[in-house]
Length: 199
Image 1: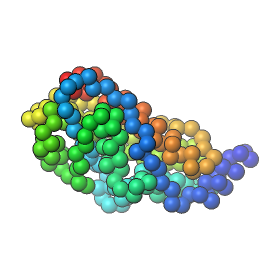
Image 2: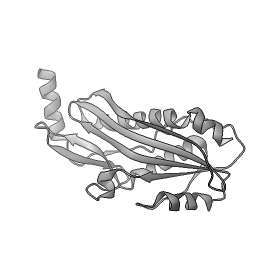
Image 3: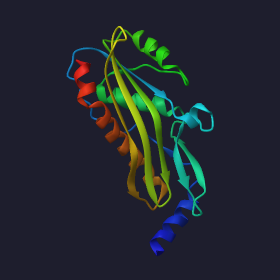
Image 4: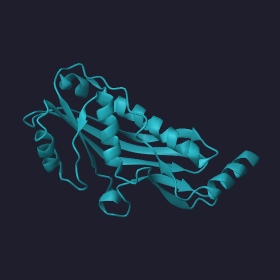
């Protein structure tokens, strides 16, 4: 009980103004192909599309009484851009920026314009951490792989709610979240439906 109260006090003192850095932990991705690849990420989180949260929003940090404070990317740029960067790094590929609220059809057109042999579109339907004394991760991620003409070759989707474990300081949450993103993108993109169609 004492440990929980101390943790809650620490969270209260440091709940405001937190940022997480997803750029430092790219996933280990398999792409055994000579084809070029471009990666685009769309943010379709409903609270971002409605402008209730900014595109840089990554989660909530709760103070001692449970009141939530927004957490953003360390760059203050869109989470979709940071995810595109680490996925591209994982593949040793290039990313194609997709402006906020780009329709999926327009996103595919932008990916096709890159001239890459394979086009990977990742859609973020949900991604946020919710931290009090423990860290909950809510996620819903989809991947679609296309050929150079825009023909759909394969899809995969993962979603759920994970308990990432207890924390005593908000500074511990960012590395936990970044490691979780690494694992989730490995699970999403190393699946046969995606991996085999990269060839």
